[in-house]
Amino acid sequence: MATPSVAANAYASLQRIMSSAASSTADIGKSGESAGGPSFGAVLKDTLSSVMDAGRKSDAQTVAAASGKANIMDVVTAVAETDVAVSTLVSVRDKVISAYEDIMKMPI
Image (cartoon, rainbow, N blue to C red; front, side, top):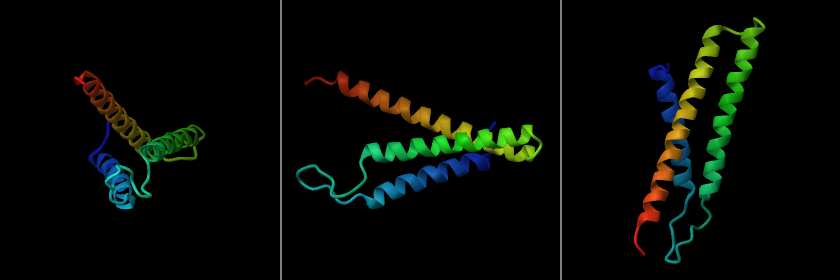
């Protein structure tokens, strides 16, 4: 179960990702192209890599605990952070799929 501090850290990480993407994106011109900002694919790739890093950290903490070299609280915290990151990723995926389905239902 995720503690409030783990959830707050996950939301703070998401806020940093979104604010860095928003601050580095330039104004969109009349042609509809962004002037030098990160693409959706780049933001998605960065987010996925951060989730993968959280999973690797969780795995490393679990292996260290199994060998008696890590504190159990560190393991629980790492696993909870990974759980929150994956849950957030799944929620975003579900929203993207829902938006795509809504767009596909629109009449032309």
